Image 1 (cartoon, rainbow, N blue to C red):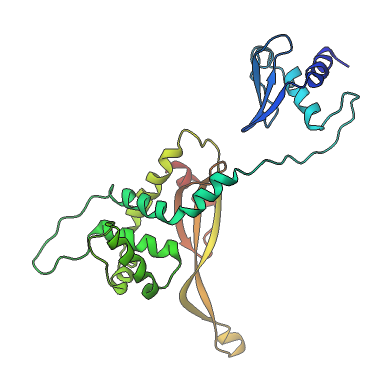
Image 2: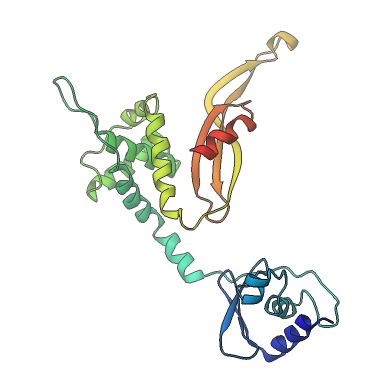
Length: 264
């Protein structure tokens, strides 16, 4: 046994290892100072920082603490489990809808209203159109059933006017909506900029309400299948925040979208 493992045994037997968020606090062998060992067993002690030591006595002591490795040299696989902060979790779940509406209202306020031209009754503002359409999609309700959401938002002062359900449906078909949504996605991910440093690229298909006929020529049968679109996303691996999105047809390949998603 090398000297680091010998000292690690002493630290482990001393019982001065504490589980904290994202890692462990290990007390110095000869003092009251604590060093931080992360979940990858990387320590911030001078031995690791200055000498580039892969496994110092503190990280080795954590392995003994978890039972991953024993002082006699035997090893075992241990699944790390973490306690759920149920109080915070329940509070977040109970207030999710109210918080979503308030955050959504703040988000759409960042959008600049276009100039209005011509006479007649003014249409619903761009900010309110964005608010209602996003709220409808988030709720997963039909257009008619989502009308009650708009009424509630108006009563709470989040909307000046509760729009007709058809007005929101028409807004979804506007082509100039796409760059605005891309901008809003970037804005929502910005607060986590200092937290997130690792990203992954993924994609998933979304069914539309349109149908495609197939098998007609081969089997002389009329069958229908749903059309799909594919969303390619860049997502943070720690916070799961979506930083950028690219929409393609159902057979759109992932690799051509890699660079645009990263560069956004």
